Image 1 (cartoon, helix red, strand yellow):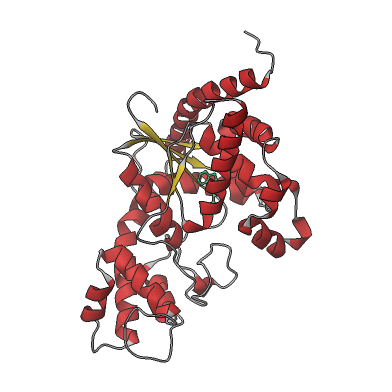
Image 2 (tube, rainbow, N blue to C red):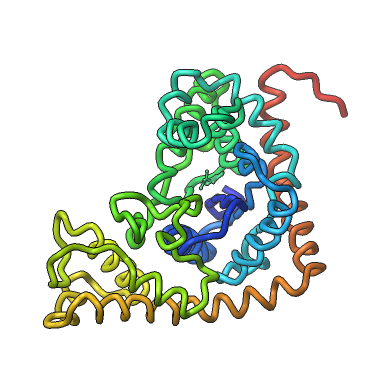
Length: 333
Ligand code: TRP
């Protein structure tokens, strides 16, 4: 709690271009928390380097991610928007939490198993302890709720276990956070293989729709989306491709699956795919326009980063000092 307000925290990596999966599953929902919660939204550059990054790209994407947060409706007056590496308390608490996180727990993380298979030549210790840094992000702000996509739920649960373990030894240190998985846009799947999550690291560009794709590209990608050999638009087991397109359409229009089935009764997949592409392109157009405006003013983005980091650091310091005191670290005044 800060004053009367509960706290919301989430992070997005500046690695790779953001997809409509990130938009529908996470970023778009962030703004809805600003009314009821004190919100911290962080561009997690320290998480990004667990896989190799080109420095110029990482720097550019850090600006882009912040601009995109703002373009998606996050007002920097109402939310604390900042970059992880600007607040050193994240790395400091992460080290401490590493010492309260078990090797076995980290070994069970699905994302670690996936990523170490994908980057077999670089299974570094940071990739392994990534969830301890994520726990530090969350716990530093005494966070109550963490809006994340379903794929991050396991990490938030580990964060809860770490917080509970620490609190058992040192009572009343951390608030134990709850993950909030959005109802809509639970999981957006790849357009090329709808049994797999749409991932910004997918090698097939037709599998992914990026928030910044232009209208023609969006419509083309949806037109090529893999479906099935039926011709009826209906939500059903085994129709992964159509289910995914219906989910995307539902997210952008607010319609239910029944309404969508009725709307496209008697239409083929071609009409439906075009409609999905159009609602997606229409919804993203104003976000893209605002994004371009914001990105054109680097000095303003830097001023936002600075202000956000100062605000975040104030709260982060409080928690870090408390933890250090409890652990027995000597505090100098
Ligand atoms: N691990 C998250 C992801 O890959 C990003 C993240 C880092 C995060 N720290 C966080 C999300 C804290 C929520 C809370 O998407």
